[in-house]
Amino acid sequence: MSFNIIVCVKQVPDSDKVKIDSKTGSLIRKGVPGILNSDDRNALEAALAIRDNFENVHITAVTMGPPASREVLFEAIAKGADEGILINDIALANSDTFVTSTVLEKAITKWASLKGGYNLIIAGRESSDGNTAQVGPQLAEKLGIPQITYVSDLDVSEDMSIISAVRRLDGSTENIEADLPCLITVTKYLNTPRYPKMCNIFGDKNIVEWNAASLGLASDSIGLEGSESVVISTFAIKNESVGTFIEGQNGTEQAINLLSELHRTRVI
Image (cartoon, rainbow, N blue to C red; front, side):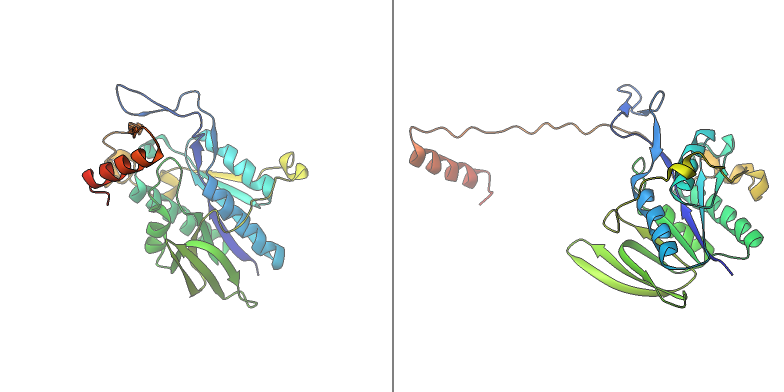
């Protein structure tokens, strides 16, 4: 019997080439290449590392997005995933994290009914185009399974029934165990993603495609209409910090003037 791992991946705009419309405040995606989200690379590598140490591990990559999102599934399979699932429907455009997690829950539940269940779901901590870190926890809640977020180290027990993980937080770490099935979100500190294999790049790509109707989703429950939140605007952060020159005839006078300025601005 297979140990089934589902990896949630997402195609995001190449952040180095994204620009913002100065009038509308929205991202200009036209002409910007899509890439596999950085944290999702670590999620995929985590699944592949587990398969390196155990037998009968089956890895499925799932993504929600436009037809171009097939590219991230191609990359996942090239790196070693066994198959991919693309959830593509124009009605899903402008979905927030609440809707996205609902769609993923429906897809994973359908996949599990066809494959006999899943043991572990792995997702990146957050996507570079949203930075909410909400989809993973929301998905676990809707599936009714335990979750461990911000994972920077993990281990699966020999009988493949328990996962042990280290959460890396600001200034501290936590050691947590959970029974499987479980969902984890991982950080870049977990591993170093491997390169695709040449034989997999040119091999067959086992990808299935589902839409909203095939998942039993009503039109008023998805997209902008079904979303619980709306992005009002997007803007680029401007660095407007201004430096202050400390004058003085010599080093001693400059030091005295600096101390006076620090007192004036109540830094000290």
